[in-house]
Length: 207
Image (cartoon, rainbow, N blue to C red; front, side, top):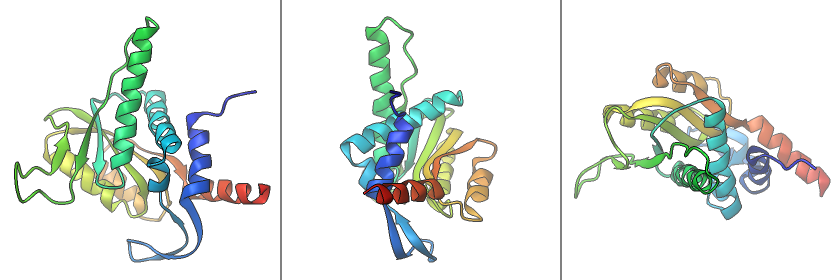
């Protein structure tokens, strides 16, 4: 029997724990007949593990090379940690098995505004001018939070290697806006909202 991939297992958890049908008002101001709260998955022990591994698999499969992964607080926070830990774990396993050590990604978090005290930094964690970084987010609707993180990273002198979101809602202006902000860096989504909905309905029918 074939073992499900990390992405397949993540999709199952998202559909079970993060997807809800109903009438919801979105942060964008619009309304929707479904809602996805990825944090109930990315902050879950198994969900967080599969999140990190699935994103690392995607980056490896697309040959994306970077030094760090980051995103806008707070939706991106658990994803950043999960991805950084996943790369560290893979590096440890490689050394233990005498294989070439893969690149470890450092993590950084982007505040929505600069701190008014202390160092007054907007970026916490890794921050080095010239470094290639991956921007992550949980759900992409209008792309506003993703774009905010892209702009902050670029203002800090970092280069965008790729952009990844867990779930893309496929709104008309979301992907084009992110791609324009990314300025040529590829934008990947692990899943579309339609895929999560289909898996959710599949699980309901199996009950």
